Length: 110
Length: 115
Image (cartoon, rainbow over all chains, first blue to last red; front, side):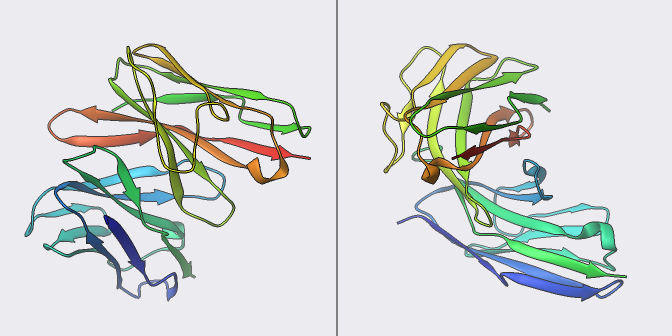
């Protein structure tokens, strides 16, 4: 069964304290792995799509990487405005549906 | 990219009534999706709505409870029928865009409270 697991569930960082969020996945045929940011009361905001192992993408303080079994979202020198829930999702070549993880709630303290 | 709007943004409804949620996209897209997000939880796919064909529902969701229309490539509706308090949730519309890759964009969501 296709599955996505995110860890940790919640993370508290001091401003400037870099860390990584993990997304482990099991799918029959990966079409893409996605990272989103979701603020309270809003829809998810697209961050990255990764397609194959070894791929990396960056945006400001965020960098996403992909292996055959997991993806990491690295946050470098975070700021309080990076506080949000970060969601990982995969879509498969068989069904084209998206499967979401449960998310990591990030809190960055000033 | 795609800009998605949803109406209403929130509503409070009585048990046993129905609510229709509208989703409008600023460009033509083939694949649209409807999700439910219960408080503090992640997203659960309700159905995939492709223009010109019947919606495809995920396990646990049925057409009688969540009828979907997709009259054209920029618009869809989701109806939550015969509501109960368990239907209180955020309902999100999304679209898949293929432009140099695959991206899924989300609307702002409809926050529903059923009393």
